[in-house]
Picture 1 (cartoon, rainbow, N blue to C red):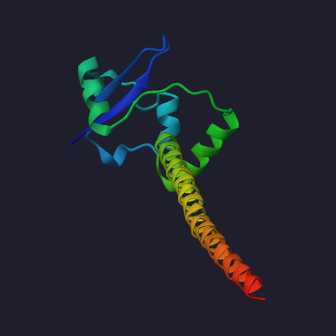
Picture 2 (picture 1 turned 135 degrees about the horizontal axis):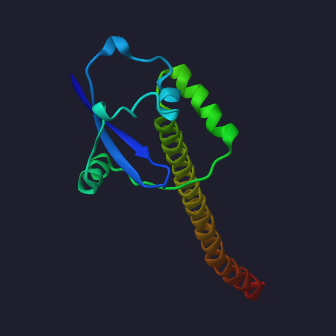
Amino acid sequence: MKLKYRFTRSMDDSSAISMYMENDMESKITGTVDAWENKELGADPSFVKAVSLDEVTKIDEDLGLQMISIRLDKSLIESYKAIANFHGIGYQPLMRDALKRFAYHELRSIVEGFVKSQKSEEVKLPSSASHTKKASVKPKATKEAAKLKKAA
């Protein structure tokens, strides 16, 4: 028998995490994402126990999660559900994973761009330093030319 947690949202928009016991693996309903959505699963009071707000907070803290509210196109959600179903996972964890991967690569791109711009600045500095060396050589050449003119 396994103890599991499930997030639920009621019609009045209040949220709770429910604990339920999974005791018969053979009676698992295929297509469980839709079964959870249309309440075929998780609605039987004999298998669901509401947990306190403190327990909800503790679970979120332990998992490093923060609840947000976001409005997405229905077609986008349906696409995620189809992809998640193909991979045998829930669509919300799939969305979370996609957002994590996007943020990681976007931040990496920003940092790489910053590093490249710093390197290009470093490359410019030595060339400007050699320019000042040329300027310091020029007066010597001018002094030698002046000596030659005096001698002539």
